[in-house]
Image 1 (tube, rainbow, N blue to C red):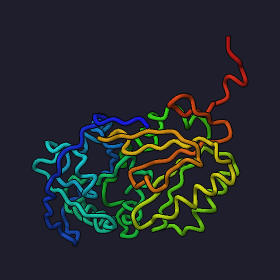
Image 2 (cartoon, rainbow, N blue to C red; image 1 turned 135 degrees about the vertical axis):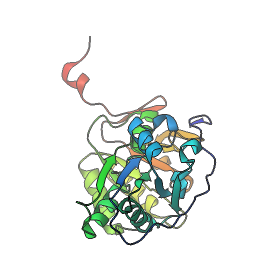
Image 3 (cartoon, helix red, strand yellow; image 1 turned 90 degrees about the vertical axis):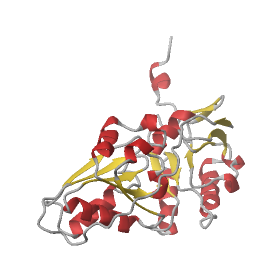
Image 4 (cartoon, helix red, strand yellow; image 1 turned 180 degrees about the vertical axis):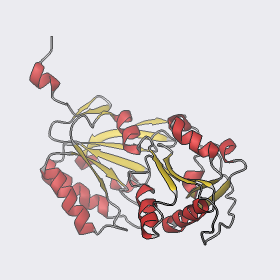
Length: 280
């Protein structure tokens, strides 16, 4: 396992200044609503567009763990609205209210807001409230966690791949299982998000059983925890050597396809250039 204690500096905790936002949309001109991706966590990977949106914002809304990833100097003099887990709808509604009250409002997600982030929920709520035409909305992409994690493993995603979340909070396990089996049968490299939590502690073991059944125990699996954050950890092991008990929600797994190989400390899925063209 490779680890790093200086992969990225995590800002200290920021007290959330929860200020009441008018819940009824008055006659004031609407502000703006931007949904941004913070990237994997290291401020070096925050895009210029996302940083600019944060600096220009009157109101910043997000999960408290993600708010802590933002540099404290950016948060100064901002109205910061944060909630814990499962407060997504509450947060997005407050952001919409703030934008309709004329505020420059930013909703933050980790990674990219359009990949298991808040972009979809914001758009759904705006549509439900018939507000899509009344507020200026912009989705600002970020570097996805899977891209940061893949770079640490080397080159695991050089060919077709599928991304599957093992969280059954919003998706039934039978649907997740069917998607996993389909991806395994199709020989996709598989990226696994949300592999295991304290309460959801059995799904990963079941997923690994499927991996071994369809791909064999020797297929390489890349394991990345805290990609581009403090205490970053990276390893490549055989599927039958994965310690499910050591995996948590800060971890992403990469299951190789039939061509994926471990090369030293790295994981490589060939694109096919050498097979087709050879080399001198």
